[in-house]
Length: 91
Image 1: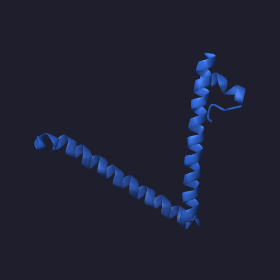
Image 2: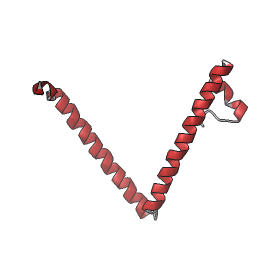
Image 3: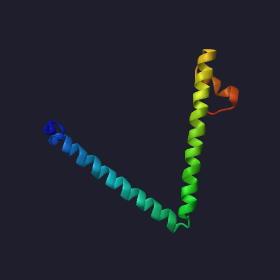
């Protein structure tokens, strides 16, 4: 029924809270961008940096997946493989 699709009071309040949190995060990000721009960074430079970070994270995720599969094949933990490949645990 259409009535069952309507959020109840608690759900509505939770949604309002989430919306407010997102608005605050958006404002904080706008302020951070303004700060970076005032420090001389360009939007193009920031976008390139973000793009490179995404690429780095994708490559790192693939590497972690491969290390995990190798660890399973060898019957060890991924932690035990790190020294073999000169990796730091913080990598």
